[in-house]
Structure formats: C-alpha cells, structure tokens
Image 1 (cartoon, rainbow, N blue to C red):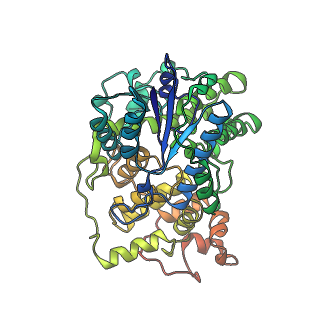
Image 2 (tube, rainbow, N blue to C red):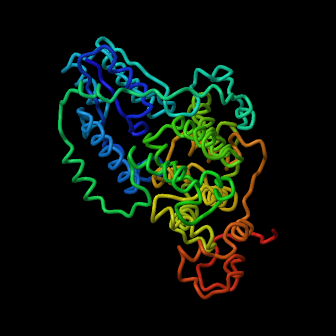
Image 3 (cartoon, one colour):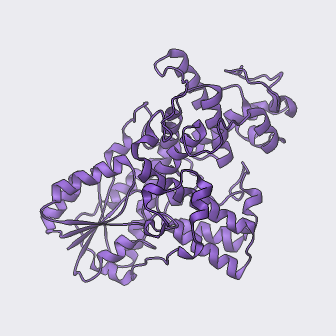
Amino acid sequence: MNLVWFKITDLRLRDHEALKKAFNKTPNVLLVFCLDPRFNQNMKFGEKKFSDFKLKFLYQSVLDLHTQIKKNGGHLNIYFDTPENIIPKLVNKYEIKKIFHIRDTTDEELKQLNIIKEKVADQAKIKDYWGNTVYHIDDLNYPIDKIPFVFSNFRKSLSINKIREEQNIKLIRLQKCTQDVDNINQLIKLNDKLNVPMKFKGGETEAWQRLNYYFYQKKLLSNYKKTRNGLLGKDYSSKFSPYLAFGNISGKSIQLEVFKYENEIEKNVSTYWLYFELIWRDFFRFSSIKYGNSMFKLKGIKNKMLDWRNNNDEETNKLFNKWKYGKTGYPYIDANMLELRKTGFMSNRGRQMVASFLIKDLKIDWRRGAEYFESMLIDHDVASNYGNWNYAAGIGADPRENRYFNVYKQAYTYDRSCKFILNWIPELKGQDKKDIINVKNLNYYQPIVNIKNNY
C-alpha cells in the first residue's frame, strides 16, 4: 500500500504529481491530511500561527478536497495530530512501502519531514515531487545554488517553452482509496463554529470558479496590468494568491490557462504581467532553497546589519501595536492594517506601504511584521512573505539600496479620492480629503512618528 501525504500547500486533485504517481501499479492507497495542533500555537514574537481567517480558509480547503475525493469514490483520512505522530503509525499499521508528497523548501517543513524519515527509515521510502511553481526545479538553466540574486536576471533566464503539462490523476483511480478514519463531521463542526467574515472561500472548486470568472466570464485578465494596484473590490486583481498559498490550484495550471486565454481571447502586456507576478513566487520559492534559514534571520539573505529598535523596549512594543491595530495616525497606513485585521487580506500595494512604514519610518525589526503577516494573511506563502520582507528591509534581493515608500505620496497616488481610507475609517467622512491625504487638521489619532511631506 502507498500513502499520499497532503499538506496545507497542496490541497487539490488537479496537477498533483505525487497523487498521480501513488496510484501507479498498486492495489490500495491511503490519502492522509493532518490538522496539526501547532497551527494554534504562538510563534517567536507572540503571534498565533494561524489567525481565524487562515484557519477558516484551511478548513474550507480540506472540506472541499474531501468532497471531491468522495465524489469520485475515494476517501480522505483526516487526523487531528501532527504528521510526525500519525504517518509512522500508519506505516506500521498498513505496512506502507512508499510515502508520496509534494516537496517543501523551508525549515519547519523540512525538519518535520526529517523526523518522519527517521521514524520510517527501515520500512518505507519517501518519494517527493516538485509541484507548487510555474517552472519545474529541474528545468532551470543552472543548479539551484546558482540562482540569480536579482529577480530580473532570474526572469531573463527562463524559457516560456519549458513550462510542463499538468500531472493529472485519472479520477476513477481514487476508488482504490483505503479508509482508516472518518473524521469529517468533526471538521465540519470546527468549520461551522469558526464564524468569521471571509472575502474568499477556500478550496479547489472555488479556485477554478475564480479563474473562470476572472478570465472567461469577465475577461479581466486583459486589463490586469492597469488595475492590479487597486485597493477596493474583488476585481482589481486576480485574487489567486489565497488559492496558490493553500495549493488549491498550482501556478503552472494558472499559467497554462493564460496561454489558452492568449490563444483564444487576447494576448497583451496584461496577460504577460500575470505570468510576471507568478514567476515572482517561483523566484522566492527557488531562492528559499539557496539561502535557507538566512531569510528568517535579522540580517536577511544579504547578511546586512541595520539599526533596529530594541525589541524588548516598551516604546517599541507600543509603536508596533499602533501599527498592528491601525492606530498610527496615518489614515492610509491604518486603513490597510484595518483591512488586514478584519478580512485576512491586503492589496499588494498596501503591503509594500505598511512594510516600508514599519521598517523605514518606525525602525522596527522586520521579522515582527513578517510574523504578523504570517499569522493574518489567508494567502501567506512562507517563501514569498519572508522574501518580500527581506526585500522591503533592504536585506534581500532588491538591487536598489534604501527603497522607500512615502506615505503621503502613496496615498495621493493610489487613493486620492480617499474611497479606500473612508471605507475602513468612516469616522473621517466629512473631513477635507486633502487633509486626510496630507494628515493635517484631522480629528484623528496623533501620528506616532513625524514624516516629512516633501513629495
């Protein structure tokens, strides 16, 4: 018997090579997902690993996966324990010979895998497959330790002709699944109990509905480059990131649909730009192998020490909490942070701005911001999140030194009408919009730091 280990980053049936290969020439397969209790634990700086928004999206994704497997005559075994505890027990119980999974690249996940490897070393082989990027790791034009430091060089090194086809299981084969436990009602109860407002619903079904809506119903892909810096609504950007983060859809599947769109509807700079954004994710994922744990350390992948506030200082904690709860006195910053706190989502433009504010204006350790994003964002991807925070802090793959986002200029450029700000801070309605943008004469929080308005 073979075992397929589904993780929180590959909750799908389509384009899942580990799943496909597990069903080759075998009478029975055990499909396993572990709802790890550590998702509820606090991390280094005290943030909960999974906010309620992230948990809800995860529950929805697993429920959808269970439904799709069951619809095709199979069964997903759901466990409420760590993979390190569950998988070795299943190997013993069912005399599992091979464990199939999608390969991870970052520390926590690799440590977990090594523990399992040690426990099952004499009984089962572990077969890993590459599966959460547009490009396959074996199709790069260099060894992974030679990946370019700067994204533009990485992009130029890629050949669009090297994108592989999907690896899809014949769904009838799911009838070979073995049932060990049936905990679906327990998961349904957890999901129903977690009553939080969701901007997006998790799951492979929803991921493909979103793609069909964005590409084919509304043809929004044709204008993606023009609208992607928006702040309000569901249509200004693709909103694929939560589905990519939980592996409800693969980057490769999306790019193959982009090719189809270009052939059947339109090919322009916007269709290219979605590819451009997808390969940013690839860049961070591949880079996380090369740089390892340095991407999580204060000096980042550049090993560069900057002048940060003391994390144990009371004033530092006070400033951080003002940022975290959207009470900085800068309406544009606060609106973005309130959106994150109330929805588990924030626009790409907003993320760059609030990161710059925390790092450059408040001089607070970037890792605290990265950890808060890890906790809150429903589209949190380890490599992309920490790679982007390295980048923002000036200790990552940014070729420009001291990149800075001026809060006044950003607000004026992207929310001149204050629609976004007033949506999240309605108490500012009736106040002059120029004053809101320039943070003058406002009946509002006092700014926690003075920033020159010299744009």
